[in-house]
Amino acid sequence: MSDAKNVAFFDVDHALVTCRILPSFLECESGSERTRYRGLAGRTVTEVAAAGEAWFERKLGTRHLFHLPLLRAFDRHRNMGHLTVLMSSGFSACLDPISDYVGADIVLGSMPEVRGDRYTGELLKFRDGAGKAEATRQLLANTGIPRSLAYAYGSDSSDFEMLSTVDNPVVVWSDPVLADMVRFHSWRWVRGIEDMVHAQ
Image (cartoon, rainbow, N blue to C red; front, side, top):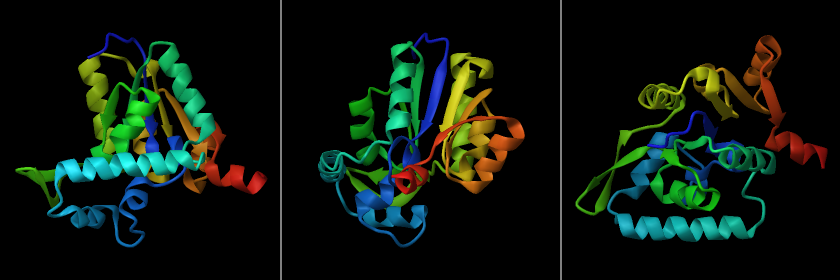
């Protein structure tokens, strides 16, 4: 574990990147995030990891994968020596290429079950809103970094609990519930992806 004195948590989906990575990777828009994992059943870890790398290269080639204000914020934290953490309901096959590209220290995503070298389609851990908040609190406890030196970036109302665990929350402005929190708590915010598209 890093000896960094500050930490920055970044929600990936519709925050650091401009899409929800799990449905984009699995090319499945229907069903809940949990049920989408069933489509992995029977596929090998190696096969899915290779598919994740190919998916990332395709998305990167569009030049629209990363939300640039968040990518710049990530780079600032990393360059200041802060511990950088990616948070997502996605999993390693689609998160690892993103992490490698941006240089994240830690990735906290969902954990699909694997038996032998194949996915079962079941989930051992689902990193939803509550799961992100739990992981944030656990990492702060494990590192000893106080919440006053912790930052969190989130874009969805489900991220509210995670954002509330740190003293320096930053909202990616687009979700109306979080927009209310920005006004009520005087939280910092950056322009959301939908807002940027509408402004063009």
